Image 1 (cartoon, one colour):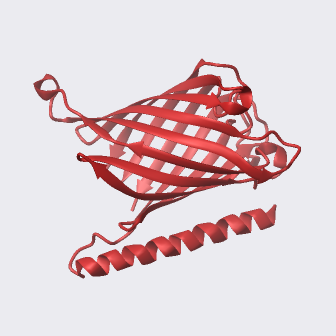
Image 2 (cartoon, one colour):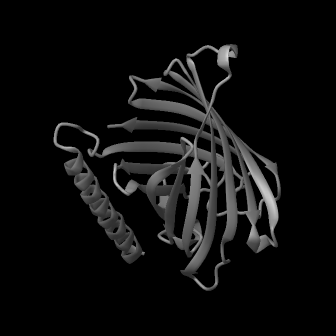
Length: 266
């Protein structure tokens, strides 16, 4: 288990070094007078209480660290979950267990008629300890996303900034414990976001899943987020989620969820 954690850390640090080198090259090409090549970071702390989720969707505390760059590699992300020892909705935050660590590499978006089309590659490592708190499989997950600004003309004040943010992600296992169930599903994320006066934000998400390990059966969850932007750097928000359809065997779904989140950008 410790070897898996070390490998994850080494991969993340190597990718971060490569991304920083690429950002430095871009910055040099633009000259030393600007700051376009300077990376910045986001740190998020998330606490989620989840009822009737599968092994990857349970009550936990999670730390996420994002590093942003201006090069071909535009994002490096590390997600470290700490699953509660008691996996009920109430959980037990004072006795956390390490879950499966995720690393994501995002690539610079290309523009199609002023609409960005981004891509990423994510890897999940079976680092959970004990291993029953994870899926027991190495997972690979390519994905694409976009961002469509929405304008209602004079119908809404200019203080509202709305956007539609779709994402498609393919997840499949490639190795790991042969006695554990293989993983193969497609996740769609359809998000509508509204930021008001650059201070408040609201997000509505539908997340349908096609689980190929369950003969192509589908499920979906819906989530509602609302929060506050503090001094442009801090964000705090509340998340409420519920199953829309499908059974609890569908990957990446749950019955209900309540989350409290905080993040800072620097």
